[in-house]
Image (cartoon, rainbow, N blue to C red; front, side, top):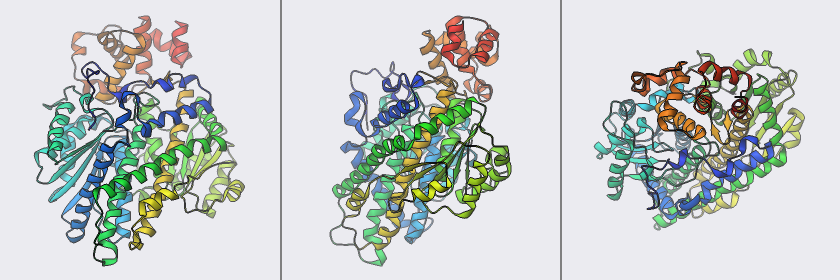
Length: 622
């Protein structure tokens, strides 16, 4: 685990995941090409480390060997589950982005297990249930008891469970409750915590209706880890490009670390399950497993290194400009998923409302097959308007309403474009000109740019060169023909997904920066929908207005309730009461910043923001 050095006082230091990244301090006034380059530089810290913590990066020996150890836990569960389907599970749990990534990994690995004649044993938990996969349902993450209840339901009657709790900031009460429950039942559970702060910077604030903080849970898990009965994976990847936006680096790092664990485990399984053959005499050692993990880490590093430069060369900055212009003109950005990259579009779109306080209709994603293709536990949720995600829904409702103010981005892994998609593209381009396709090739798919250019007005084509790392990862596995066939295809798909995620993160982030949602690299218009975001909002006001925490709280409450005087009774009210309103009310934090800076009336602050949405300009007017 990564702990704090003696130079840091954790009681007075903001968690790294919540601090501002000096690389992107002026990202809000950067042109599109420079903005994309800043995201590229910021993402480098996933692999190279950050500041005084460079020795604690994802490539550190400690992290790599923990990934290998957890892979061994996976192997044991999968092998026993193959014999007895009631034996065990591998559970991925988290809130928001973390829960969505856990869902994606569980579905991908289960599909692979079926192909290699093993029984699916991966489960996912996301705070708020399946609805949270597509829309903001962040309030449930504040409840440790809700987390425990969800875990108990998933793991009923299981004999062994590998539980992986994901919380980028080591802060989510939902996951804290689950980890605590796992530690109370060590005969069944092996708890794993995945996040990106030093353990001493885990949140130390009281949780409503619970007697612990996340820090006390982490402290207990450290003891368990020292006894070899639990794990903490917390490489330090530095602050986010947009402060606190863990959907960016945090989501990317979560995805690749979990994939390294699961791919390495399946590679180890191939030695003992391949076509019913006895395992080879020279069983894989932990050192060899760690080396395989390192090959995969180098592969993902190559994906990052090659995606951004290719995208810039292909004209990603133009698409970024389109998206920003669309949102400023009252238009929309639509992602259209045509194959296995579809969920990456859903992932990016679902994160925009809670991150930027955005309208859910600003950025939408529609996918081939709709909910049937997703395979969610709760089945088809398409009754609600924001759950209409099929291409048929897009054709019927959104295509007729398209205008020149809209941007439409198709997503594909390079497969041949079928006739139905060609017809859809024709319908879209007849109504708007800002249409592109992001082609994130699997390494085994031949380029077909000429064909794509005949269909799409703009083609952003990405192909990363990772064959050498796949060969190195597979070395010594010649007998496992089934893994060569389906495992390698999965590895290539994971690489394409990562490229696609980086591209879409750039588009949506840049679009909302152009919309005035970001001040320097701080999100200033987030929805106060849970305790984490409520506290983050207060910190933003305190930082920007250079005022005390109490003055910042007063400004936030004045903005939230639309009053000029705040009583002590209101200040002492439970945070959950404030978030009931904060989940829906727009521009709470921008208004609070102006109130704290200028000490004007609430109605004056709101009026100036109506005329000048960018907060720097609004402050200048006052």
